[in-house]
Length: 79
Ligand SMILES: [Zn+2]
View 1 (cartoon, rainbow, N blue to C red):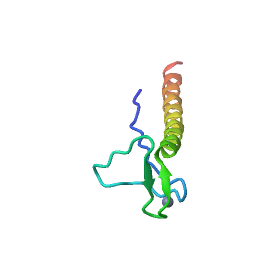
View 2 (tube, rainbow, N blue to C red; view 1 turned 90 degrees about the vertical axis):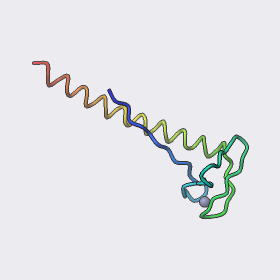
View 3 (cartoon, rainbow, N blue to C red; view 1 turned 45 degrees about the vertical axis):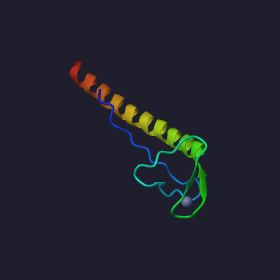
View 4 (cartoon, helix red, strand yellow; view 1 turned 90 degrees about the horizontal axis):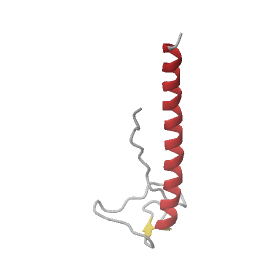
């Protein structure tokens, strides 16, 4: 079973715009990330929490789909 890569973007908690700093910016706990769209400051920990939840949701859906496919294959093989 292949587990596809799941990419989760950090998004602004206020306007949902993707948050991005300069290329080499590394955010760490306690940082405030300024949204380029609305100018609000996002608490990095909260942003990460939201991203984590979304990631888990996506992973769950992907795995469910994969399992359904695998099961269909199994049923096809068994007479
Ligand atoms: Zn924003």
